Structures are given as C-alpha cells and as structure tokens.
Length: 332
Image (cartoon, rainbow, N blue to C red):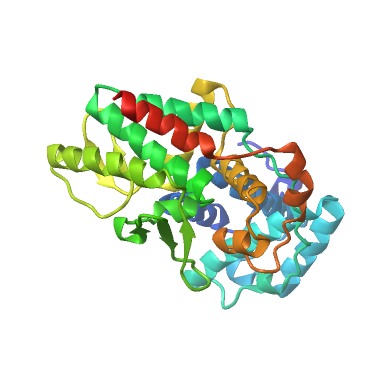
C-alpha cells in the first residue's frame, strides 16, 4: 500500500462542491449568451478567489461563506494587486457568483455587496480608425450585391448591425433584444427604442441612410423567411448558408461576425471600438454632451472627458455611409 504523509492529509483544498457550483455558474452565463472572452474573464477572477481559499486553508462549507471571509479576501486583493481596476473586477465577479449562490438558497445573504470596490478608472478610448470603418462598410455593401440570396441577406443583416452600432451607438446587449416594433421609421428621422434594464426606455436617432438599408433588408428577409418557412418578430436572425434557423442573435453571435471581418479585412474592429467611433463622430458633429450620454444609456454623471480630450486625434464622420450605399444601389 502506498504511504500517505501527514502533509498530504492536510493539503489545502477547495470547499466541497465549490468547483461544481462554479462550473454550473459558467454554464448559466453561457446560456445567457455571454461571450467566450467574458466567460474566460469570470473564470480568471474566480480562480483568484479559489487561490485565496487554498492559500489560507479556508476549506469551509459554501454555506459558511460570510462577511468575515469576504472582508479578509478584500484585504488579500489590496495586497496582491496594485491596479484598482483589477481589484474592482474581481470583487464584481465574486459578487455576481454569490448572487448565483443566493438564488440557489445556499447562502442567506450576499456579503460581497458590503465589500467596497475600488473606483473605476476608464481606459483611453481606442476607436476603430475612420479608414477601417470605411473599409468595413464598403465590404458589407459590396457583399450585399451577391447573387446568392442567403449571402446577400447575411450581408444586409450585418449592415443593419453596423448602422445600429456606428450609427446609433448601441451596445451588443442592446441589439440582441431588438424587435421590428422597436423601429420607428420617419421621413425626416428614424429612431430605435431601447428598453433599459434600470431606467425608463428611451429612443436613439438612426443615421439618414438607415431607411434605405432597412428597406432592402426587409425585402430580402421577407423572401427568405418564406423559403425557410419561419416567422419571427426579432430584428436580427441566425442562419446557415442555406436557410434562416431562428429569429434573434446572441451577443456571442455578433462578436463572431466582427471577428470574421476583422481577420478577413485585417482591420481594427470590435463592437466596442466601433461604438467608440460613434461617440467621436457625435462629438465632431457638435452633438450636446448630455444628449450623447442619453443616447448611450449612461448616467448624467458620466464624464466624457477622455473622449473630448482625444477628439482631435480621432477624426470621424458618417457622410460616406450614404454616398457609398446609394452609389452601389443605383448601379444595381
């Protein structure tokens, strides 16, 4: 029989069942449509908590997680990380995980909510450069001229996504929930309705070219819905190269679209960077700061200082949207 040393018997380990609970937590996040990168960040942040438990031999039952434990963990983070953002992110990840434990009835309250977080320091904006924005738009418009109906439809769907982000400054999470009824198309101005989870719904203006793009999109979408024998009210959809699969499009689905174009076109492009380009576009157009914050779904206290400081180095406009689209539309 193999001898077991006393050191091995007392080797620190995680609380019983914690690994399984964290795996279930990640699965729930995936079901909610969280991206692979977001899941990776959550795992990194919770691995820090796991390391703390092991290093300090906190082999407690999950039900014993209390204020004292998380307060000590907060002190551990203060010593381990010099970055306020790093500490803040790990506290937020643990808070969300403890909310998950609370919902399962495994703890009676969430002690992490009483743990102060470090102030958030905003990163310097890194928008998609104007030349890359133009390259992306031109690629989408050119793909919309395809003779293959599904290729054309996917390109036109992606044009809508582009206009919602660069044209209206929407987040990916805003876009995934949109339905046709959220659009209000007008002769002089069209708007999109956003249902904010923490305050009243509000509307955001869409760029002038949106109506023409949407008209072409809905025409081919209606045709392909009939071919696929499917009906839905969502603005976007999933599809394979042959048919529409379902209405709606997850955050991860949108991120994959951007990843594909980023690699294909060799450009700087993410939904976040394109949204930042929209903010600079609005500033260059002289839009009121409070109005910009309202359109972005931000609190009035949010400071646009970093954007205003970097505006001179990030020239941005949207005149090319209409010029290029209509030139191709006429040639059709």
